[in-house]
Length: 258
Image 1 (cartoon, rainbow, N blue to C red):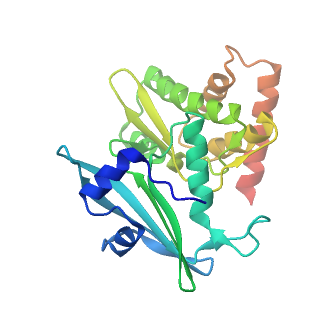
Image 2 (cartoon, helix red, strand yellow):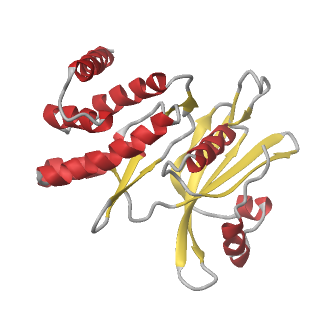
Image 3 (cartoon, one colour):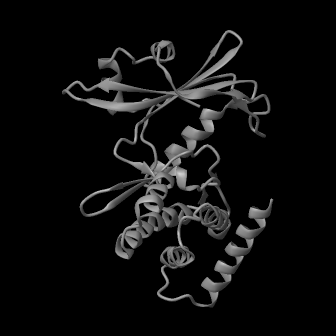
């Protein structure tokens, strides 16, 4: 895959003397998370703040990996796992599904090592839904109207994703980032490496629906059923909605026993 280096970020990285693969790879930073040692290599992520030419700063996450590969039919000898991730980031962006903002992507073969860089803008001001719910569970839940606004914001993004037949495949609360504004709630979806395009919308939707339901125990059963109705754009739980809810509940129970 070709390098991806959006024009709006070229000036910013150039201003910070980081406008090449070699400079980004050599950048000395603390690990935001300990490197993942598997797939025959390693993959790690760091955070850094870049100076803006007009003043101020912007945070980015710099992911670097070496010999961290996955094999597919089209790539039997292996490819960087970042390739699949950037492809999905760009797929989401093309479909206007709010996700990560790509800053830089490139792959290089250095001697016998396959190295890759994927840099994205930090979601400063956003919070994982998982953390938000834990705080509410401890300090008290907001009113029903606020909860419905949040469910509406998530359901809209989820529905748009499925309208494009995209299955996230790991639709956990920790991968849903939210930001409360005065008049709206913004949602961003992260961890897109495993996202897939399915043949039909219903094939894309079911796994994500039951995954979110299974990992949303902090929410009441009523709230989770209400979310499904918002997602389906139904005013009441009709026969089709009841059948889908039954399938989701059954699948959630089965997975919970494993």
